[in-house]
Image (cartoon, rainbow, N blue to C red; front, side, top):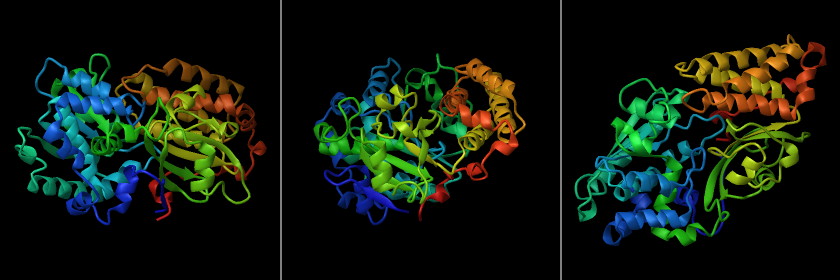
Length: 442
């Protein structure tokens, strides 16, 4: 797999890239567990939270919620039993960073989880990984055993009064299992179905109805660096409101699909031209899904948008887990949106009728347009269905599906209307870019 790592102070992937193997010995040789040793030898749990707060770290798995705020809510909860959970499910189309971190630097994730547990007063953690990733499961289980043998997990960690165990939980491969409350349902032994929020916010009523921290595995990896290097060094990269770096997965119609860690706020154009090699030969960029399909389309005219939460939100899209899917001039946004609509239809757990019926309806309507069987009424029906189903389920899946098709109609109205007649479609326009893991250079 091609991989590029930014120069300068060591970010997450630099440490992962320097490690020849995912063993504890290699991780410690690269400076691993320095943050944990520092915390347990001289920092209180509140001090750890304050350092994470000072860093400005935002969650690297979706909405970019401030990490320290989650931790504060759990640490201050009246219920004494608390949990920490790592979300390593990575089901969002176009995102491959978590698989990389799990495979290359599992101890960095474990260190971040241990620090989080110490900060919030948890004595049990769970790292969720999908059954469809057997190599990652094996690597994580070995890392856990190594940490136990070295006194980094278990009773009285590093000779302190703090004790913690972490379970490597092998969960279902379903896309919806990556939603944080569905993940908690799976951990409790039930099918992965999202819980209604409120009342089931994880920080209030999480795992076994106890206050729970749920963070993405990349978030925990950053925590390990913040506690070893300090929050000021973390803030040397990124923007004031979105500090630090993030791992971007670039796939689709580019010369070189790539994983690359860059400062938040880095321009999309530079990422695509300098690291992904630009568009395919003879083509130009047409549009982008900057956070996978869940946040809708960013048209090519906005290619200079900084890759950070607020700037992308202002453009009507988002960063999510930073899985960037590129459509070139030879790709068809209608066909791509149809495929994503099918992905959402298959990914729905089916418990909420608006989601079960809405995703099926949107896929069917887009299929009729793509096949040349649609009409102006079909387009209007898509508008009505998308508006009707937004925000109607227990999780964001149905809203993501609605936003995706709404952005298609907003940015490519002429192209959609042109699909109403079969003969009007370009044969080259039927290509759909690959966003699967096997599309990466390896």
